[in-house]
Image (cartoon, rainbow, N blue to C red; front, side, top):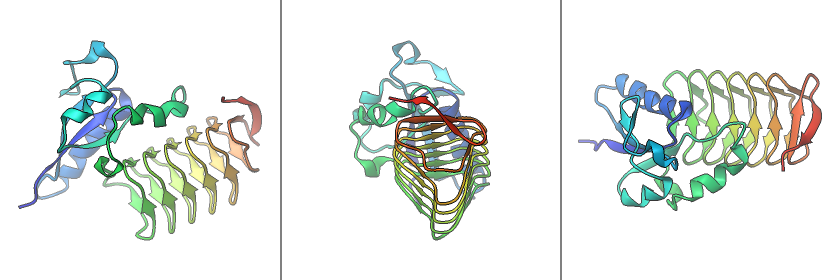
Length: 221
C-alpha cells in the first residue's frame, strides 16, 4: 500500500491556496489519494493558528524543522518579492530533496523535459521537449515554454507567458502576465519582464523591461 505523502505549503496567499487546490485535483483523478496538505507556514505571526481555505497555518517557515517526515513546496513569489525568494525559502533550512514537485493534471509536460525540486506547474501550462527547469520555479496557468528552454532556480513564469525556443532565463527572474520572449534570447538573473512585454533582445541582469518591443525601465537591484 502506497503511503500518502504529507505536504506543507510555504505561504498563505493566492499561490499557496492554488497549490492546495492542485493537490486536491491530483487526488480527485486517482483511484486513491497520494497527497494530503496538512498546513501552511508563514512568517506573519498574526496568521498562526488560523485557517485559510480550511487549512491551518502551523507557524513560521523556520518551524519546518518540526516536521521531519513531511514534504514541502513554496507558494511565495510575486512581483514585489521575487528577488527575495531564495532567501525566504532558505529560512526553513530544509534539504532540497524534501521539496516536492507538483504538476496540475491539465498541464502538458514533455517526457524529455527535466524539472527540479520544489517546482509547481499550474493548470494548462505547456512545457515542450528538452526543457530544463530548475528548483523552486513556479509556472503559472496557461504559460507556454517551448523546446530547449532553460529556466534557472527561483524563477516565476506567470499566466499566459510565452517563451520561444532555446531561451535562457537565469536565476530569480519574474515574467509578467502574457509576456513574450523571442527565441534564443537570454534574460539575466533577477530581471523582471512586465505584463505584456515583448522581449526580442538579450536582457542584462537586474533589469525591469516593459512594452512592445520591451525597453529598459530601471534596475531591480
